[in-house]
Every structure is written in C-alpha cells, then in structure tokens.
Length: 311
Image (cartoon, rainbow, N blue to C red; front, side, top):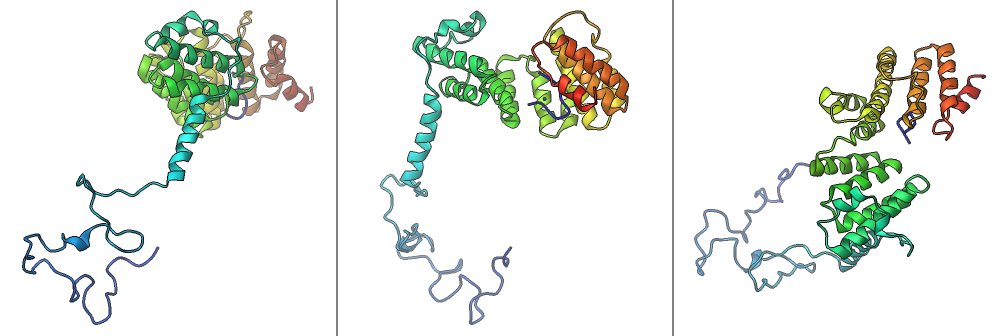
C-alpha cells in the first residue's frame, strides 16, 4: 500500500467518615445486631434472616428464588432486545447478489472453509467474495460482509484475516490489529506482519512497529512482503525523526529494479519522502519523478507532490 507522510489510509468523602448523630458508629444502633450478639432463636447467625434478602425497587425484600440461587440484577428487556437486534444485524450482513457464488472464492480459501457444514461454508464464502470485491471501492461495506462471515465462523483463521484486512482498509487500525493477531494465533502465518506494523504506526506507536523488523519475521515473508515491511519500518523511523536510518533501510531494497510489481511505486515514493524529510529536496524530486514513471495506476500521489514542490 502507498506510503505517505502519515500512517496509511498511507471525589466525595471517604466511607465511614462522620457517623450518625448521637456518636454511635454506623451499623451499631439499637435495631442492629453486632458480632457479639446472642444467636437468633432460629439458630441462624445474626444478619442472615428475612431482612437480609435483596430489596426490590420499592424498598421491600424480594421473595427468595425457588432454586436457591442468588439474585442478579435484571436486565432491561429493551436492552436485551437491542443487543439481539444489533447482533442479528451483523449476522445477517449486507445483501449478496444472486450471481455471487462460493465458487468465486479461490481454491485455497475454499479449502480453509472445509471444516464447516456445507450450507454454512457456502454463506461464509459468499460474504468473503463480496468483501474481496468491495475492499477497494467501499471498504466499510466490505468490512460488514467480513463481520457477517465472522459471526458464522469466528474460529476460522481465513475469516479473521478478512476482518483484519477490511478493518485496515477502513482505517479501523486497533480493530484490524486485533483481528490479525487472532488470525496469526489460528494459522501461524506471518503474512500480516507489515500490516500489523503499519497499524502500530497508525496508532502512534512507532517503536512497536519497528519491533516487527526481526530476522525471524523476515524469514517467513516473501520478497514483496519484506519490501512492504521495510516501507512501514522506514516510516516509523521517520516518525521518530530518524531520517537517515529510514533512508539507509530503504536503500537496502531494489529501488532501481526494472520490474513493475505493485510494490515498486510504493518503495520509490517512500524513499523520495524520506529524502525530503532529511532536507535532500533535489534528490527527493528526482525520486518522485521516478515514482510517477512506474505508477501507471496512480497508487501514490507522487504527481501531486511534485506540483507542490514546484515541478
């Protein structure tokens, strides 16, 4: 995802003070039994008779429960209905067009849903297909589809991954980080490490983002994943004012590649931005131009940055 200068889209008195009038401490008046009072006639300890039952709103004691269990505060029925309604709305999710099929999900993803009952797997798959289709044009709606899938298959790593990706795309970074952590616990994948680091950066915790850059993490990432991690960590270094360290990290990556991978414009943009932060304006302008040259899909705002710089 495109690197930018900001994290990505890139009282009262203490109890017992001042007792009642007459100088007697609270709880030791004429009508109260203390610890040294004689036993009751019924053999029960003082304070455990009828008057100790929970009181109703009108101040009268409640009738004991038949099952002998202690009373608990009753929930307002309207609150319960509201909770059910909200949960049901998430479970239902947005409507899915009739022409969207579970077969539209890739083979790997369908295999991840095989442990579910057939009809349930079909519904979850269709919600995941919609999440994938909408994640760029309408990430909020995509996230609702992912949540509907999670309501049906909360212990499936693939589903938690989808929730993380759609929350990330929607700018819900704390939620995304939680979902990515859940997915990693389930399937042990390090695939989300760059996005998890970026979430930490967006949550104003750049040092935590930097802590993802370890040999153990990088050993589990492919080349593109390692480059994405470098982009994020370099951004976190810049957040801490470590501009030279950010530049050195990005220079370890293939800035001069002739390839056209999606990461190429993001890498060059991050490098140009780091150079600009370091006060190396002319070099920054050069690399913004190099970014525009490979950014046919306009994944970055390099052209606008050049205009702002008078180019």
